[in-house]
Length: 106
Image (tube, rainbow, N blue to C red; front, side, top):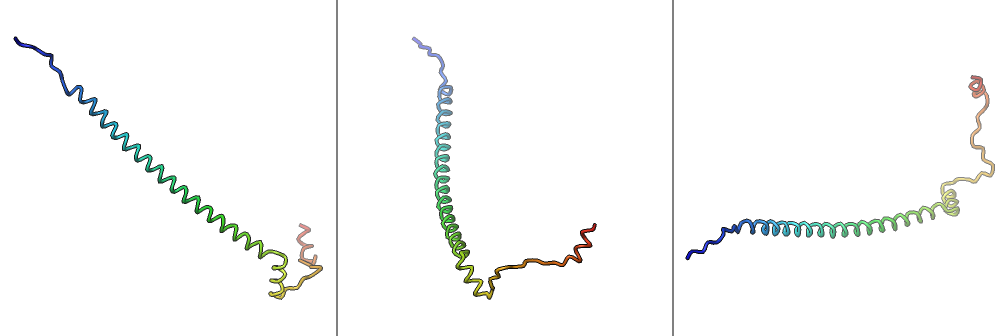
């Protein structure tokens, strides 16, 4: 007695399984790369924040030094060192009216 069995194609079953497996591997590698990129960016952000804090501290030091240099006492001391005199009634700019009188007519 002969038993006939229908022809089954193992390729039709294996192809979807193989393609799903390859897709799963590719997606896993992509997820790992995205995670590594995220970790690297987090580290770079932390380093940039530390650098900003250092620059803020330096800026505060410069501001304090500038404030210290522009106090009244330090400016009076600097003026004394440079030989400047304090004038109680300064005359800033005086121009005779003769040349300007001609200009004002036009």
